[in-house]
Length: 294
Image (cartoon, rainbow, N blue to C red):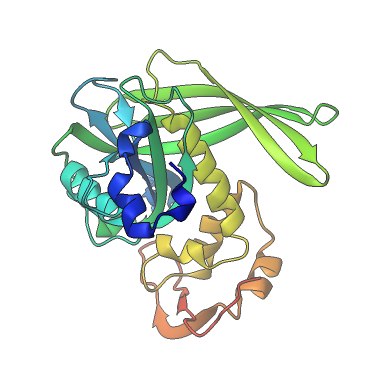
Protein backbone atom coordinates (compact mmCIF):
# COMPACT_ATOMS: atom_id res chain seq x y z
CA UNK A 1 0.00 0.00 0.00
CA UNK A 2 1.27 3.46 -0.88
CA UNK A 3 1.21 5.14 2.53
CA UNK A 4 1.96 8.54 1.04
CA UNK A 5 -1.65 8.79 -0.16
CA UNK A 6 -3.11 8.06 3.30
CA UNK A 7 -4.18 10.65 5.81
CA UNK A 8 -2.47 10.40 9.21
CA UNK A 9 -5.70 9.01 10.70
CA UNK A 10 -5.90 6.31 8.00
CA UNK A 11 -2.22 5.50 8.41
CA UNK A 12 -2.54 5.03 12.20
CA UNK A 13 -5.62 2.79 11.79
CA UNK A 14 -3.76 0.34 9.57
CA UNK A 15 -0.43 0.61 11.39
CA UNK A 16 0.64 -2.69 12.98
CA UNK A 17 3.01 -2.20 15.91
CA UNK A 18 3.70 -5.94 15.84
CA UNK A 19 5.74 -5.44 12.67
CA UNK A 20 8.62 -4.36 14.88
CA UNK A 21 10.21 -6.07 17.85
CA UNK A 22 9.99 -3.86 20.92
CA UNK A 23 12.78 -3.65 23.51
CA UNK A 24 11.99 -3.12 27.17
CA UNK A 25 13.03 0.12 28.89
CA UNK A 26 14.48 0.40 32.38
CA UNK A 27 15.85 3.16 34.59
CA UNK A 28 19.00 2.92 36.71
CA UNK A 29 19.92 5.48 39.37
CA UNK A 30 23.40 6.59 40.41
CA UNK A 31 22.94 8.06 43.87
CA UNK A 32 26.16 9.64 45.18
CA UNK A 33 26.93 11.15 48.56
CA UNK A 34 30.02 12.04 50.60
CA UNK A 35 30.61 10.36 53.93
CA UNK A 36 32.70 11.89 56.71
CA UNK A 37 34.83 9.17 58.29
CA UNK A 38 35.68 10.36 61.79
CA UNK A 39 39.07 9.86 63.44
CA UNK A 40 39.52 8.88 67.08
CA UNK A 41 41.84 11.89 67.34
CA UNK A 42 39.38 14.80 67.48
CA UNK A 43 42.10 17.20 66.32
CA UNK A 44 42.04 15.67 62.85
CA UNK A 45 39.43 16.70 60.30
CA UNK A 46 37.17 13.85 59.09
CA UNK A 47 38.35 11.97 56.01
CA UNK A 48 35.83 12.27 53.17
CA UNK A 49 34.75 9.25 51.12
CA UNK A 50 32.66 9.22 47.94
CA UNK A 51 29.85 6.71 48.37
CA UNK A 52 27.20 5.18 46.12
CA UNK A 53 23.86 3.67 47.11
CA UNK A 54 23.45 0.05 45.94
CA UNK A 55 20.71 -2.52 46.43
CA UNK A 56 21.05 -6.28 46.84
CA UNK A 57 18.88 -8.04 44.27
CA UNK A 58 16.11 -10.19 45.71
CA UNK A 59 15.46 -12.25 42.57
CA UNK A 60 16.89 -13.58 39.32
CA UNK A 61 18.85 -12.68 37.30
CA UNK A 62 21.91 -11.86 39.41
CA UNK A 63 20.11 -12.89 42.60
CA UNK A 64 21.97 -11.71 45.75
CA UNK A 65 24.30 -9.50 43.66
CA UNK A 66 24.64 -5.78 44.31
CA UNK A 67 23.26 -3.41 41.70
CA UNK A 68 22.07 0.13 41.09
CA UNK A 69 18.51 0.89 42.18
CA UNK A 70 16.14 0.75 39.22
CA UNK A 71 13.60 -1.23 37.28
CA UNK A 72 11.28 -1.43 34.29
CA UNK A 73 9.33 1.57 33.05
CA UNK A 74 5.58 0.93 33.04
CA UNK A 75 3.69 1.43 29.79
CA UNK A 76 1.62 4.25 31.31
CA UNK A 77 4.35 6.30 32.99
CA UNK A 78 7.12 8.66 31.90
CA UNK A 79 10.76 7.72 32.41
CA UNK A 80 11.15 10.45 35.04
CA UNK A 81 8.14 9.09 36.97
CA UNK A 82 9.67 5.60 36.84
CA UNK A 83 12.88 6.91 38.42
CA UNK A 84 11.10 8.26 41.48
CA UNK A 85 8.77 5.28 41.77
CA UNK A 86 11.58 2.71 41.63
CA UNK A 87 13.75 4.68 44.05
CA UNK A 88 10.89 4.86 46.55
CA UNK A 89 9.98 1.18 46.15
CA UNK A 90 13.51 -0.20 46.43
CA UNK A 91 15.21 2.19 48.88
CA UNK A 92 12.41 4.21 50.57
CA UNK A 93 14.15 7.39 49.35
CA UNK A 94 12.16 10.24 47.80
CA UNK A 95 12.25 14.00 47.19
CA UNK A 96 15.69 13.87 45.56
CA UNK A 97 16.63 15.76 42.40
CA UNK A 98 17.89 13.58 39.51
CA UNK A 99 19.25 14.53 36.11
CA UNK A 100 19.49 12.21 33.12
CA UNK A 101 22.97 10.81 32.59
CA UNK A 102 23.14 8.55 29.52
CA UNK A 103 21.32 5.77 27.67
CA UNK A 104 22.87 2.29 27.67
CA UNK A 105 21.73 -0.16 25.03
CA UNK A 106 24.22 -2.97 24.41
CA UNK A 107 22.28 -5.89 22.92
CA UNK A 108 23.30 -8.46 25.56
CA UNK A 109 23.25 -6.22 28.65
CA UNK A 110 20.33 -8.12 30.25
CA UNK A 111 19.95 -11.95 30.02
CA UNK A 112 16.12 -11.76 30.18
CA UNK A 113 15.40 -9.78 27.02
CA UNK A 114 16.49 -6.80 24.93
CA UNK A 115 16.66 -3.94 27.45
CA UNK A 116 17.58 -0.29 26.99
CA UNK A 117 18.37 1.62 30.17
CA UNK A 118 18.12 5.34 30.80
CA UNK A 119 20.47 6.18 33.66
CA UNK A 120 20.05 9.07 36.09
CA UNK A 121 22.47 10.88 38.39
CA UNK A 122 21.78 12.41 41.82
CA UNK A 123 24.00 13.98 44.47
CA UNK A 124 22.91 14.52 48.04
CA UNK A 125 24.03 15.34 51.56
CA UNK A 126 24.24 12.06 53.50
CA UNK A 127 22.31 13.50 56.46
CA UNK A 128 19.17 13.86 54.31
CA UNK A 129 18.87 10.15 53.47
CA UNK A 130 17.51 7.20 55.44
CA UNK A 131 17.60 4.31 52.97
CA UNK A 132 15.70 1.07 53.59
CA UNK A 133 15.38 -1.99 51.35
CA UNK A 134 12.03 -2.86 49.79
CA UNK A 135 10.27 -4.42 46.77
CA UNK A 136 12.89 -6.19 44.59
CA UNK A 137 15.75 -5.37 46.99
CA UNK A 138 16.65 -7.61 49.94
CA UNK A 139 19.16 -5.10 51.29
CA UNK A 140 20.48 -1.59 50.64
CA UNK A 141 23.81 -0.03 51.60
CA UNK A 142 26.25 2.79 50.90
CA UNK A 143 29.44 1.65 49.16
CA UNK A 144 32.69 3.62 49.12
CA UNK A 145 34.19 4.07 45.66
CA UNK A 146 37.88 4.49 44.92
CA UNK A 147 39.92 4.48 41.72
CA UNK A 148 43.65 3.79 41.84
CA UNK A 149 45.88 4.30 38.78
CA UNK A 150 48.34 1.45 38.32
CA UNK A 151 49.73 2.02 34.82
CA UNK A 152 49.84 4.77 32.21
CA UNK A 153 50.95 4.19 28.62
CA UNK A 154 50.96 7.60 26.92
CA UNK A 155 52.23 6.21 23.61
CA UNK A 156 49.22 3.90 23.25
CA UNK A 157 46.84 6.35 24.97
CA UNK A 158 46.03 3.62 27.46
CA UNK A 159 45.45 3.81 31.22
CA UNK A 160 44.91 0.92 33.63
CA UNK A 161 43.48 1.30 37.12
CA UNK A 162 41.74 -0.58 39.91
CA UNK A 163 38.16 0.24 40.76
CA UNK A 164 37.18 -0.66 44.36
CA UNK A 165 33.56 -0.66 45.51
CA UNK A 166 33.38 -1.71 49.14
CA UNK A 167 31.29 -1.62 52.28
CA UNK A 168 32.98 -2.17 55.63
CA UNK A 169 29.55 -2.50 57.24
CA UNK A 170 28.62 -5.42 54.94
CA UNK A 171 32.14 -6.86 54.69
CA UNK A 172 32.07 -6.66 50.88
CA UNK A 173 34.92 -5.58 48.59
CA UNK A 174 34.18 -5.66 44.86
CA UNK A 175 37.22 -5.03 42.66
CA UNK A 176 37.57 -4.47 38.92
CA UNK A 177 40.62 -3.86 36.80
CA UNK A 178 39.71 -1.31 34.15
CA UNK A 179 41.65 -0.67 30.96
CA UNK A 180 40.83 2.68 29.40
CA UNK A 181 41.97 3.36 25.84
CA UNK A 182 41.52 6.71 24.10
CA UNK A 183 41.23 7.06 20.34
CA UNK A 184 40.65 10.28 18.41
CA UNK A 185 38.10 11.12 15.73
CA UNK A 186 39.72 14.22 14.29
CA UNK A 187 40.41 16.03 17.57
CA UNK A 188 37.53 14.54 19.55
CA UNK A 189 38.60 11.90 22.13
CA UNK A 190 36.68 8.64 22.28
CA UNK A 191 37.21 6.43 25.33
CA UNK A 192 36.75 2.66 25.26
CA UNK A 193 36.78 0.50 28.39
CA UNK A 194 37.46 -3.09 29.30
CA UNK A 195 36.12 -4.18 32.71
CA UNK A 196 37.93 -7.17 34.20
CA UNK A 197 36.53 -8.54 37.50
CA UNK A 198 39.22 -9.27 40.09
CA UNK A 199 37.06 -10.20 43.09
CA UNK A 200 34.71 -13.19 43.16
CA UNK A 201 31.72 -10.91 43.74
CA UNK A 202 30.67 -8.67 40.86
CA UNK A 203 28.26 -5.83 40.20
CA UNK A 204 25.07 -7.02 38.44
CA UNK A 205 24.33 -6.47 34.74
CA UNK A 206 26.53 -3.80 33.13
CA UNK A 207 26.17 -1.49 36.13
CA UNK A 208 29.94 -1.23 36.63
CA UNK A 209 30.01 0.47 33.21
CA UNK A 210 27.25 2.88 34.27
CA UNK A 211 29.01 3.67 37.56
CA UNK A 212 32.29 4.38 35.78
CA UNK A 213 30.54 6.65 33.27
CA UNK A 214 28.77 8.49 36.09
CA UNK A 215 32.04 9.13 37.91
CA UNK A 216 33.60 10.59 34.76
CA UNK A 217 30.58 12.86 34.26
CA UNK A 218 30.73 13.98 37.89
CA UNK A 219 34.44 14.79 37.58
CA UNK A 220 33.84 16.84 34.43
CA UNK A 221 30.80 18.74 35.70
CA UNK A 222 32.40 19.76 38.98
CA UNK A 223 34.82 22.01 37.10
CA UNK A 224 32.21 24.15 35.34
CA UNK A 225 29.01 23.87 37.43
CA UNK A 226 28.23 24.29 41.16
CA UNK A 227 27.24 20.61 41.38
CA UNK A 228 29.63 19.99 44.33
CA UNK A 229 27.45 22.03 46.67
CA UNK A 230 24.82 19.26 46.60
CA UNK A 231 27.15 17.22 48.80
CA UNK A 232 27.32 19.86 51.54
CA UNK A 233 24.95 21.15 54.21
CA UNK A 234 23.62 24.68 53.85
CA UNK A 235 26.55 26.09 55.85
CA UNK A 236 30.12 24.84 55.45
CA UNK A 237 33.77 25.85 55.79
CA UNK A 238 36.01 26.55 52.80
CA UNK A 239 38.21 23.65 53.90
CA UNK A 240 35.22 21.29 53.70
CA UNK A 241 34.39 22.60 50.24
CA UNK A 242 37.96 22.19 49.01
CA UNK A 243 38.07 18.60 50.30
CA UNK A 244 34.94 17.79 48.28
CA UNK A 245 36.57 19.13 45.11
CA UNK A 246 39.81 17.26 45.80
CA UNK A 247 37.93 14.01 46.39
CA UNK A 248 35.97 14.20 43.13
CA UNK A 249 38.89 15.45 41.02
CA UNK A 250 41.30 12.94 42.56
CA UNK A 251 44.07 15.45 43.24
CA UNK A 252 45.20 18.03 45.78
CA UNK A 253 44.46 21.70 45.07
CA UNK A 254 46.49 24.71 46.13
CA UNK A 255 44.58 26.47 48.88
CA UNK A 256 45.20 30.02 47.59
CA UNK A 257 44.26 29.16 43.99
CA UNK A 258 41.12 27.32 45.04
CA UNK A 259 39.89 30.16 47.24
CA UNK A 260 40.55 32.70 44.52
CA UNK A 261 38.42 30.73 42.05
CA UNK A 262 35.65 29.98 44.50
CA UNK A 263 35.28 33.36 46.23
CA UNK A 264 32.47 34.61 43.99
CA UNK A 265 30.55 31.36 44.31
CA UNK A 266 30.19 31.49 48.11
CA UNK A 267 28.89 33.98 50.64
CA UNK A 268 30.51 34.38 54.04
CA UNK A 269 28.10 34.28 56.97
CA UNK A 270 28.46 35.58 60.51
CA UNK A 271 28.43 32.03 61.87
CA UNK A 272 31.50 30.02 62.90
CA UNK A 273 32.21 26.39 63.76
CA UNK A 274 32.37 25.25 67.38
CA UNK A 275 34.12 21.88 67.19
CA UNK A 276 36.06 20.45 70.12
CA UNK A 277 39.79 20.36 69.36
CA UNK A 278 39.59 22.86 66.48
CA UNK A 279 39.84 26.62 66.26
CA UNK A 280 36.63 28.31 65.07
CA UNK A 281 36.30 28.67 61.28
CA UNK A 282 34.00 30.94 59.32
CA UNK A 283 30.96 29.32 57.76
CA UNK A 284 29.94 30.01 54.17
CA UNK A 285 26.89 29.31 52.03
CA UNK A 286 26.33 28.98 48.28
CA UNK A 287 25.85 32.25 46.40
CA UNK A 288 22.56 31.58 44.61
CA UNK A 289 23.02 34.70 42.47
CA UNK A 290 26.17 33.32 40.85
CA UNK A 291 25.61 31.87 37.37
CA UNK A 292 28.94 30.48 36.12
CA UNK A 293 31.47 28.66 38.25
CA UNK A 294 34.83 28.88 36.45
